Length: 92
Image (cartoon, rainbow, N blue to C red; front, side, top):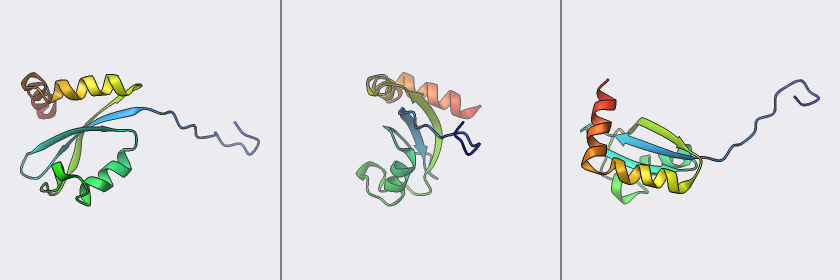
């Protein structure tokens, strides 16, 4: 606690793996260290891969301490086994 009686906010760096889904059911998998900024970029069509997607929403998030861990998981989720995992996870 600081002298003013409020807890201090501490930024803990992490990498977020996220899945976006649009109104047609298309999914996009990505990772970032700033999800708010990244969503803003997606919604403002600053990303080629999501520029044709409309009504984007975040449907899944995982948190990782390192870029390499998040990248491995992202690569997995882009495989057929990973897509099956997400389909099962998102249907419940």
